[in-house]
Structure formats: structure tokens, C-alpha cells
Image 1 (cartoon, rainbow over the protein chains, first blue to last red):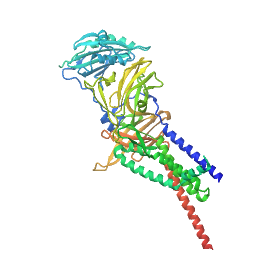
Image 2: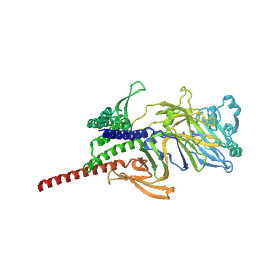
Image 3: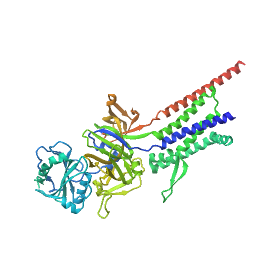
Length: 207
Length: 387
């Protein structure tokens, strides 16, 4: 009798231990932050989600400016242009080596206002927001054939500085944003050409 | 534990009544789970009734929940204990009972297999278009905040912060980066609208979120619905704030900021698992019976490219022929975009063999037990005839 009770208790304990291990394994499934080094590859956004999700997650690109509001420009020597996608109207590549990107974006109306957009740009390079007074100090007016553009030039803090030079102007009710962003060196090298590019902005010849 | 109490507990654990009670509870759970699928969907109902230790009832008007019924996990665990204990108590160790021992071992393995599946199975999806090459699978329901260093022209450093961490943490340190994420708000399901004047300032002061309004919604439950997750997050690096951003799987392109010359993007997306190999969809076929629109067959011809193994080959995945590769099974699940998009259900279950093994054990045990009984019976009959 004693032996059979001992055997029973032993089996009991073994079973409870087994069950506890399984239970703990199930309960301790805390998700961790993952890390992966992924080769860049062209992706079609549609292929990344199920058809059900696609219908819900599709966000339309902003409308093109209304008739009479489109701009033309002359590319500085060595610059290249590719058609825009998503939010972008056009993407430009200056003729300097290094990390640098120039984008042209157009949005209907005031698009949040000048101060909000400038602070958004500053935030992209880790600078804090500024007020209207500092905005006026930072602003440089640049006359173009499409009207006056406000130009801003900001550099980030830190060891590897980033620099942003951007102009914005209102043409026929739409706000145009032309932004050059990248490492401080390449942006400084392309700064003069960027100003020439802004000066070349003009209303579409067809209008 | 005194021997008397131990003996009574042992009797209770090994009783056949306990077996019957557990089986009755399982029947109730199965019926309740089936009915609940109308409101909760298959996944939700199974989570609430079957893959849980207790069924919780949310008290109306409060955030409190009360346990009202044992869940499938608890009943299954008690049934397993009951089976093991009963076997240890009643079954004699003899060749005569070998078949029954094998049958019981098979049943126990079946329960263990369900626990392993519940604890470790991971279901994801691969939605891939013809001609597209992908190296990741995505969760159909769970989201992540993807923080990606896109500076390198050849590679991206991708950090996936699971939504469970966003919901539970105030500040998340992202190991391997100088960045921490302060979570300022998390919405399990939300509706995104254009922020109107009079709505007040958005918590987001960077990116597109400044112009977007967020309205909290109750989570959806249908199998074909998906929550629209949203969160306000503030990246901080070396003590410097990069502003507050709205991230949501309802927003389009990732939003970016620059830190110390490196470009980082933020986006809420389905939780990804990157693979050590790539899959390219060469062709998707949706065959119909001639002269009708009745589907006859769905199949995806994919190319596996695994540089680590020096392997590149084509595989045809069809309705009843999944691809098993790298511990995952790829099943043909759905399609779209005028038959140019294939959706594969990807299942990773370390215990996938256990149900097969347990069925074989139960079958073999029953056959063995029957044969031994038949043999004994024939032997007895032969002895009678001889006498």
C-alpha cells in the first residue's frame, strides 16, 4: 500500500511538472522587438496586403493642382528628374555625390500654414519648433516667375549634420513645397543650383 | 500531504466521473464556441472558449471581467491529468494490456499536441503578386511599429516593435539603435478623418498626423475585417525629441526623420517575419470547369531562392498540396487582383506531426488489443474443443 501511494504521488508530481512546463511555455509568449537586415528591393504596395485590407488601407494621393496652377522649371546642369509617386509631384537628383534628395510637393490650399510646415521640416532633422517671430527671421524671400517663394535653411545638431533648404510658395490657391534634404556637405555643394532651380519656377506655358 | 488526503485526491483524479464531467464540459464549450463565431468570428471564438484556461465575462458597464466557465485549456489539462493518473492506477503492466497502453499513450499525445499547437503555432500570410519577389510573411491580424534605418543604399535595418509593447509600455528602448519610442496614445481600432477646424490641435506635430483626426472604435471581430491600429509616438535619440507622429496602418507611405545623418522611417504595418530565403510568384492559376465559372483548382507556381543552401527551384502549391519548407507550411488560401495576386496561408507549428503520430498510435493500439483478445479467445476455444 505504501509503495503504491508513493508511486502515485511520484506520478502526480511528474504530471503536474509536465503540465506546469506546458502552461508556462504558453503564458510566457511575450513578444520581442525584432531586427532584420533586409536587402532593398522594389516592392509593389498592393502585393503586401490581402485584398480585404487593400480596400481599407488604400489612401489616395493628393489631387494634382487645378487648371492654371501647374509649374514648370529648368533643371540645373547635371540634375536629373524622375516622375513623382505618392505624395510627390516630382523627385530631383542634384549633380553632387552623397546623400541628398530634392522633392517637389503640391497640396491644395494653405496645407496647414507656413509655420506648421516649417516646424515639420525642422522636426525632420531634430530641431525644435519655432514661433512666428523666429519664422520671420529665418525666412528669405526669393522672387520667381511664379511668384514670391519663402526660403528656409536649417542645419541639424550632432556630429553628422543634416541640412535642409526648402522653399514654399502659393500659386493659384495651391501650395508648392520644394525641399532639398541630405547630409550637410552635399547640400552645401548643391545650394547654389537649388536657388537657380527655385528662380526658374514658372507657370505652365499652356495656361 | 497526509497519506489519507493524498489517497482521496488520487481517487478523485483517477475517477471515471471526472472524465465524464470533462467530456461534458468540452461538449458545452464546443457548442458555445460555435454559436459565438457569429459575433466573434472563428479566431475570436476559438481564443475565448478553446485556447484559454478560463472563459471570462465582461461585466456590462465596467472594465471588470469575471471567470464564468473553465476554458478548453483547463478542461484539456484536467482531462490529460485524469487520463495519465487513471492509466497509472488501473492499467497493469503486462503484455495482455499492451494495446490499451498504446491507445492511452496516443490519446495523451493528442492532448499534448493541442497544447503545443495552442502555445507555439504561428499563422501568417504571404500575399504576393505575379512577378513579385518577397522575403517575408505577415501576420493577418497583429501589427507592429516598423522603425527602419533606410540610410544604406543597399540594405535596410528593420526593427519591428510589436503592438503589444505599444499598448503596454510608455517608453520603449529599441536595442541596437540610439532611438527610444515614447508612446503617447494607442488605439486598438480607430477611424481616421481629416482634422477639421474646431477639433483642437492634434497630439501629432510632425508628419501627416497633424492634419488627421483619430476617433476610437470598438475592435472588429469578423474574420474578414481588420482593426485600423493607430498610435501617437515620439522618437527620442540622445535626449533629443523628433516630435510626435501619428502612425497607423490606415496611412500610406512611411514617415521619416533624420538623426545624425541617418534617415529613419516610421510606419504601422502588419507584423512581419523575415525569411532566410525569397519566394517569387511565377504564375497563379485559377482553373474553372469548362463552360462554367465553377472553380476547379487554384495553384501558385513559386520559385524558392535560398542562397545559404545554394538552392533555387520551382514548386507548385495547390489546394491540397502545401509547400513545406524551413519549418513552415504554405497553403493556397486566397487570390485577388484579377487572378494576379495569390494569398498563401503560412503555418509554423512545431507540433504538427503529433496528431498524426497519436492517430497512428491509437489505431495501432486498438488493432493490437483486438488481435490479442482474438488470439486469447481462439486459444480458449481451441482448448475447449480439444477437451
